[in-house]
Image 1: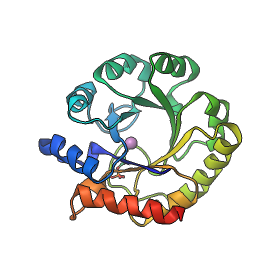
Image 2 (image 1 turned 135 degrees about the vertical axis):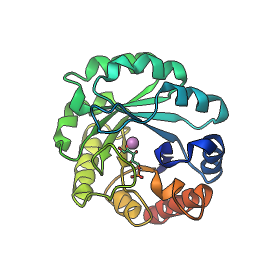
Image 3 (image 1 turned 180 degrees about the horizontal axis):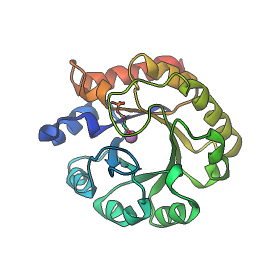
Image 4 (image 1 turned 90 degrees about the vertical axis):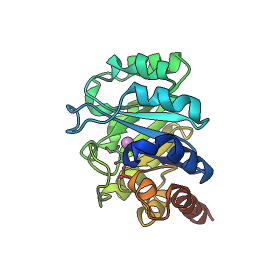
Length: 222
Ligand SMILES: O=C(CO)[C@H](O)[C@H](O)COP(=O)(O)O
Ligand SMILES: [Co+2]
């Protein structure tokens, strides 16, 4: 099964509730919430209040992509706000295990993310302990960037690692995913596609754009 995770970073926040409803109607499987602290990445975005605001208006799982220097500081507030999954960057945690155990101990899912400059191999010691591995396909910090050309090879390498060590771990890709790059990601082993601009920036509207990405995933699996 392939999942579509619309990234609300690209949404018009004055209509956030309605836009989340639209992607739900279009077949989205989860909502991706990009959290940026202005340190780990050169941009600021949103915090737990947004997760808290979304929680009562959708049944879709809320996954929080923590692009922050010190994720352990924010675990409690995002879990209390209603996040279902917390994704932490490998680059900022010297030992991910305590954080993984804390999040799982509270009944939520945990993901580890890697930047384009980080070797896929660093995840091999943790794949058995996580629910999701996120391969960044742009440098984190901004929506609307182009999919990096080295990404397919990295996705394939990560898929091989996951198949060998923990096939239940999801392989998510994030950044520049659209109708052209989504099939490439799926062919190389991705099973969760994050898309912001391709969904919320689409002239066809978020419902149709989500449906279209969904059709691509089905074609790739035929
Ligand atoms: O983590 C992110 C950026 O750091 C976003 O999830 C990602 O960029 C999605 O946006 P787009 O589909 O527009 O590239
Ligand atoms: Co993201």
